[in-house]
Image (cartoon, rainbow, N blue to C red; front, side, top):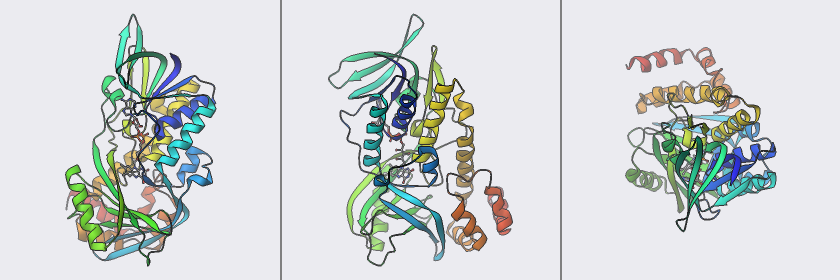
Length: 375
Ligand SMILES: Cc1cc2nc3c(=O)[nH]c(=O)nc-3n(C[C@H](O)[C@H](O)[C@H](O)COP(=O)(O)OP(=O)(O)OC[C@H]3O[C@@H](n4cnc5c(N)ncnc54)[C@H](O)[C@@H]3O)c2cc1C
């Protein structure tokens, strides 16, 4: 089997790269270790920036729209209306849609083939795959896109540093009858999690309630305590490890003469404030496809995304220094100008404008300095 591009991993980032490349006439092979197309159910909240990178998301993929984000800590709370609503999607449906789209564009998708490494023979780099029944298969391509998730084997084989990961757990629950289904809510409580809890309605009847933890073993226990306190009725659980962006990650390399580009969780292209990686994974997949189609440079095409991800990394660094009263102070400082700003600039479009917040609320200068100096 010979391809222009071999994509490892048939989930959102890899499939999106395959769609773009195949639409432009490249021979694309996608290799997925799972024996069939059966991704786990996962409810996503996604910014409207998705439309800019994806270009025309079919209406049937949008489960629900969120028009207000409510934030709470120690009894302090603020509501941020979202004039461009956030979208709620479900991963299985998204991946099925992308598989159809990639195949329609001409990509070949192979299930039950696990990437195991590279082999350089006589100046040529081969891509090594194992089938489910243990057969070893070698393929050749002019480039590889590693989209094999947070524990990327492609990264390991190409000696590219992998991101750290955090456990994410959410419970599907019945939406309480007094809850406005257009409102998503975030609670900060650093005694339980250095990140936050959330409730995201996915319809007028159902929602997911979740948290990001530090240890996988603790996630379920902490989440169940929160669920018990709020008397949510659990229907099912969703869980996984999410990658975390760090400014030092360089998600590209070469094995022999074969260029290797990582996209999505494999590359740590995840906003560490919210641990959202779907839009940013699409964004990187588009950058990798652009670089391959136009003979450009992936690191250069990644720069706008990296700026955005680095900003989220800095915000997280500062947030980690807040205690619960600090979060309450932050929330109480969010005036109407800041609310308008946050409503207009979504979480994928912060870089380049974030500094404006200090003019909208001068209190942030003092708070930022105190956090930077650790006081
Ligand atoms: C519970 C939960 C909730 C989340 N909620 C949100 C949210 O609301 N919004 C948001 O933006 N993000 C969310 N995320 C993060 C989001 O799921 C990820 O950022 C996104 O799925 C990354 O996509 P990906 O294509 O890079 O990798 P993945 O979805 O991890 O896919 C990797 C693919 O590679 C395959 N693979 C792995 N190893 C190999 C191998 N050796 N050979 C071949 N194939 C291989 C895997 O089987 C898989 O299909 C959530 C994550 C979790 C766990």
